[in-house]
Amino acid sequence: MIGDRHERDIQFELANRIVSQKQTLAHAMSDAIAAVKPGVSDQAYRQLNEINFDEALTRSREWLESVFQSEPPSKDVFAFWFGMYDTTQGPSGNEWQQMYISGSDHFDAEDEGDWACDCVWFPNSRYPSVPEMELFGELCPHMENQAAFTLSNSFVGAIAVDHSDIIARMHEPKTGIFGKKSPVEYPIAFGHDSGDCTLVGYATSEGLRSPS
Image (cartoon, rainbow, N blue to C red; front, top):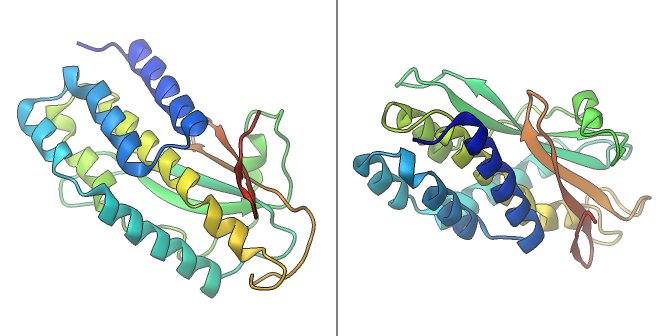
């Protein structure tokens, strides 16, 4: 049995690994599934390992590119938040975490994520279809407490890391949709609306710069 405190330690460790190693979605989810295995039934464990995270990544990238093209933020928005909130929408009625994207016109690396609570860009299409995260909720009866959240947190963290290039590309002077503007680095963070916040780094034209 995995206690809630230990589960939170696992979530923190996994999130730090995603950021420091810039893990792919498949790599991050392999680590997360292995981490929750002691509290997951054999049936649920098999279902988790059958998920094609490469397909999930392709679908998510198409979603974010579409959001930026159809509902671009104003030029004042430069910090981006990959958030999660709890919902019970779905056939199972179990709680799961829905991912979304929003943006802020200010950022402070020292305020522990308070800036993400004051976002000003909320595109109508900010909620992607993420059947993988919904499946985590459906499997809740077969997993110990916090396991589904651990999986969702790693999923969104790896998505934030991967999608940093999309955010940087949208701001390129010649080819981006916003044109040249300042700053040249775009903070990206992820977490849950309850207050958890992990800074992924800063999207630049040269790649994702680490937060430290």
